Length: 75
Image 1 (cartoon, rainbow, N blue to C red):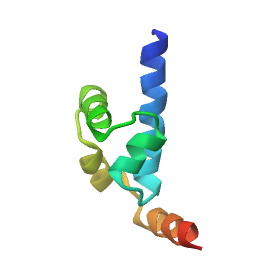
Image 2: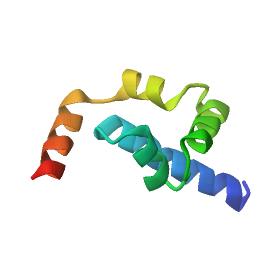
Image 3: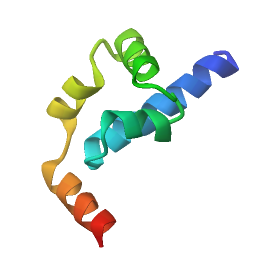
């Protein structure tokens, strides 16, 4: 595995975690996970995970965790 591949895997892992556990916008997830743009995030999601960030969130997010994180960020 090259460094570039490893880095993309790490960024995807963080993006997956954020999509599962927060109510962050896709734009914020892309930025926070190091992809910079939603286009880049979507491209890498499609290539490695065969899905989109939105579809991933619909399938794997924990609504309770998102609610708790959302409330904590407001406080």
